[in-house]
Image 1 (cartoon, rainbow, N blue to C red):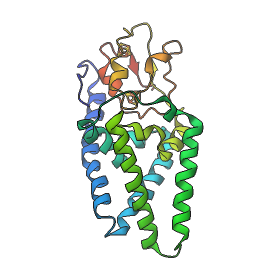
Image 2 (tube, rainbow, N blue to C red):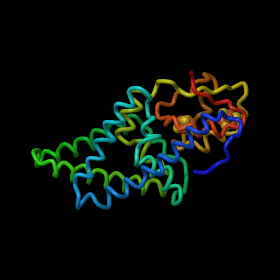
Image 3 (cartoon, rainbow, N blue to C red):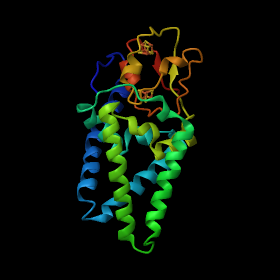
Image 4 (cartoon, rainbow, N blue to C red):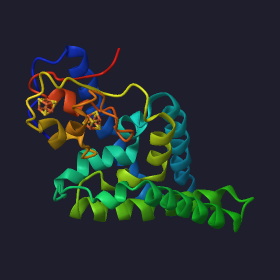
Length: 228
Ligand code: SF4
Ligand code: SF4
């Protein structure tokens, strides 16, 4: 999503955000390549567990940073899907914790069951990963079209794990004294998070925050900051 950037934010934050966008543009084609060629080259499916492991390790230290900055599908949803999305609010039910863990259990269960049909064959495992990638990306694209580019990420199983293990770390700070309640930050948030509901505490306690800094850049009065 393109939006006006507050020119007074630090050069470092601007550079980091710019770098994130370039990385996402570089990663997004991986999703298309894996889906298009994985049926012929099943080992491409191993991209899925690589991202899963990276996400889980990263999640321990920085919550959903990997989702927001290093996940190829996240890059695909952030950079390419806005071209076709209606950009509506993400349905609240999809944020429900029980629903999310049910999705996690269902997808992991299907993956283990499919893999167990030929457990000694690494090519078969690659095909299972590829199929999971195709099915979940298709769901994500349909949801992105009708709702919001990152709708899938609201209940992606790996995102759910990252939010649970490290979503509470280093959360964004909101200075209510300077905030103009203009909602610009919420408008640019790729996860559609209710940032202003945290005005009273000053800590944006949203474990699903991707640490993308889009809101920090959009805020006209620099009311949003990261803790030291
Ligand atoms: S709250 Fe800010 S940093 Fe977190 S996902 Fe939304 S825009 Fe990105
Ligand atoms: S963009 Fe800044 S001023 Fe506007 S509502 Fe968000 S925190 Fe407040």
